[in-house]
Each structure stands twice: as C-alpha cells, then as structure tokens.
Image (cartoon, rainbow, N blue to C red):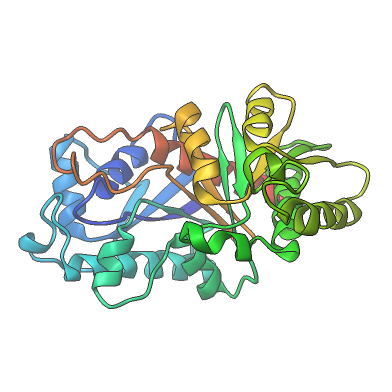
Amino acid sequence: MLRLAVSTGCPCGVGPEVSVLAALSEALPEDVELWLYGDPGALSEASALRGARLTRRQRVVPTSDLAACDRRPGNPTERSGLAQLHAVDAALGAVLDGTCDALVTAPVSKHAIHRAGVPFTGHTEYLAARSGAPRAVMFFVGPRLRVSLVTTHLPLAGVSSAVTREAVTATVTLTAQSLQRDLGVPSPRLGVCGLNPHAGEQGLLGGEERAVLLPALEDARGALGAGVAIEGPAPSEVVLRRCRDGLYDAAVAMYHDQATIASKLLDFGDAVNVTLGLPFVRTSVDHGTAYDIAGQGLADPRAMSSAVVRAAKMVRARAG
C-alpha cells in the first residue's frame, strides 16, 4: 500500500474541497492511501458541501484548529496563512521520515503566508530549502505539453540574472532524467526556449542566448550523453508549438509565464506540477486557491486527482 501525504492547502480556498474529492475519486488506485494534512474543520465543511464521506483509505491528520472566522471561504487571515504552512510542514515531515511515500500539495496563498510573517515565494523554493536540495525545478506535465522552468517565482526584472549557465544546465539535465526515469521516455528529445524575443535574433535583441544558453546546452549534452537530443535555443513560440505537436518530449522555458501561459492554455485542469531535484516525489495542481469560488461547491477536482495519480506512478517508477 502506497501512502501519499496530501497537504490540503489554504483552508479558505478550494484546497480542502479538491483534496477530499480526489481522495474519493475512482481514479485513485486501489493500493493507494491518502493522508490528508490540514484543518479538520475546513475538511469537514468541504466534505459536507460535496456530500463526501471519507473511508478507511483516507486519513485526516489535523495540523491546526481554526475558528470558523479564520476558515471562511475566500477570506484568508493571518491564522489561516500559518495554518496552511503548518499543513505543508507536517506532510513534508511524514515524507522525510518515511511514514508516507510522496507529497501532493493543494494550492496555498503566498500572500497569506507572507502576511502571517513567514517569507514564502512558493512551494518549490520552500521544499527545496527544507529538504536541503541544491536546486528544484518546476515541471508541468500535461497530456498535450510538458514544460520545465529554469527560473520560478521571480519578478520579471530579476529573470535575466537568474538565467545562468549552471541553472540552464541543471534544468535541462533534470528534465531529461525525469523523462527517462519517471515518464518512460528512454531517448528524450528536448527543445529549449530562448530568453529574448526571437531567441535574441543573433544578438540583436539580447546576448544571453550566445553567452549563456549555448554553452549550457553543450554542458547538458556532455552530461547526458548521446541518448538525449537537445535543440535550441529557439524562439519560445516555436519550441512550445513543436512540443505540443510531439516533435519534442518536453520543452525547457526560461521563466514562469513563458511556460505557464502555454501549459494552462493547452492543459488547464489536467497538467500536474512536478518538482524535480527533491529527494522525494512531489506533485501539485496547476491552479491556485480560487477564492472566488471557494465554499460554493464548484471546485473541479481533476487537477488534484491527476496530481495524486501522477505521484503514485512516479513512486512506482522510481522503485523499479
């Protein structure tokens, strides 16, 4: 029996709702047990809202005890900001100590956590720091597009300096290795996006492609060997279109929106956010807290179900 630790996200968002529904989904493999880490009041209300009843294959692990005023749908407070981080910490602890086999995360509010006094730019960076991983990479895996990111949650003004030779090499390498190990692609083909419009137009529109990306791709080719094909850097619209059409097994983007706009246009609700570089499997949904529909019974659990199924598949693939 595989045990997956699920941090159920912001108690005021759709996280508890989609977590409960994913736990009861027919897509959940028979040999998978979900441990739901979160506020029991929020999870109970979400279950009642959707007429769901958890069975012995689902276990609620309380990580907070919020008053009703701190778990009102769509209205996060400082207490609910801390509560969602406590859920992440507890679920992460269960994975690190071997109680659970993988981590699946529902959406949190970066702003609510930060407002509660804890610096937080995103799950990816937080989990890397907590687990001692030297680098963590966001990798969106969808039915029509797979795309990883060299940089994650940064202001656009900081992207260029963060696109380093080392970062590009590591991202390309981790992406290719995940395709081989986790997704069953023995000889991956990767397309790498340029940072600048038209991939720099031979230096006219920016020099990062020549100065940083080309040397980094040579480094990645040397590290991965002849079994992996790497093309680029090329204009991002070309790379992403070719990836959608099946000419690449994955694309590598330079910054957040370069990847997520394409992913969410093509695969919203079906893509899974996989974190590469961690010493354990972590998956997540491809959407946010959706405060505008929280508590209305309208949340779509497909993304959470996909994240749970993907986590189970990756655990099995890594176990051989």
